[in-house]
Amino acid sequence: MTPTTIHAINSDPTAIRPGDYIPDPLHSHVLFEVSHFGLSTYIGEFTELTGTLRLDPARFADARLKVTVPVASVRTSSSVLDEELKGPRWLDGETYPAVTFEAVSVEPRMDGSLLVSGHLSLHGITREVALVARFHGSGINPVKQAYTVGFDVSGSIRRSDFGVSASLPLIGDELKLVISVAFELQEPLA
Image 1: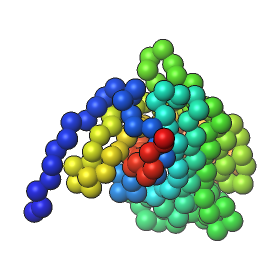
Image 2: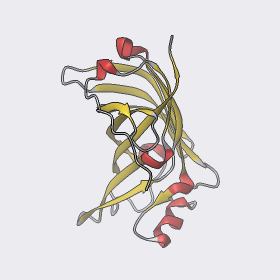
Image 3: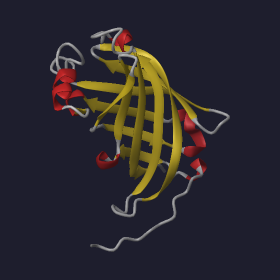
């Protein structure tokens, strides 16, 4: 085993290094949950995402974020269901291979979170959505030795608003999302 250097993680968002970031693909994913027949909550995830983040803690409102999630990366506890979700009845990954989110505004809130509004494109339909971002911390990843910042972004959408109406109302319309991303610094801002 290779020894690693442990660095302190800073939980103060004003200490984030300004720069251009990309997601660490091994530590970033999208979780979703939906009511299953009103009897349980079904949870799945998208295991891949790419994107860019430009962030300066002195000007959070000027942040720029774009994330792309391949439909082919959807995973649940059932490989049969995975294929069904990728298929034409649900997400139709062949026709619409990716889900994208691009922020258009970022507003700091009194509780320390950020309200991130932007355009979500899913299943060929683009709508404006608002999500809440919560900062975890920043510092040097002890394994990769890369400067990293971490956020969880959460919110809800109605899947029918995006043309995904299979099995309504048996399978819930409200889709809760949690996007957990570790962003690695690529280029510091001057």
